[in-house]
Image (cartoon, rainbow, N blue to C red; front, side, top):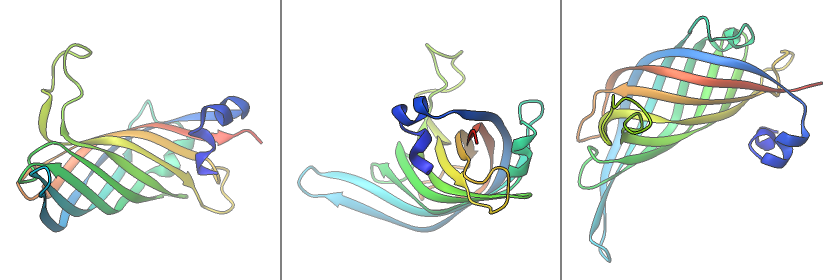
Length: 190
């Protein structure tokens, strides 16, 4: 069911209800493992980092819908793996992981992926509040499904963009962080 709203034909054919999700997050980033890899054929270096991300999730009024209040709580990203270009984790990277979002009355889970150390809020689209290389920025998309039995939100998709800042380091970053999660609950119309 998770893929139903991530496919153009299925989204077009399915009657859905949309509820805004607007959350402030803060928490900790913990590095569990880091290693450098080399590709002898091309001479490139990549750093792979395994991390754990634990976030406290609070509502952001007035944009958070009544339905999305159930998602306030805690979000944990498990198996968060990042790969960085270059000899350390200060370069641009990509990341992916699984998340479990434990709200006040529901639990959702799914995938979490995006880029690290890249500034997307820059000119020409924005006022230039970031540069193309922006160390300490984790951004991407999460996509999951509400799994709680008996909830009116059971089976609803959760699709959102996240923007999080953290303290960068050559080992991948660690410590406190803060950010936002903006998106939608996507529920099939019963």
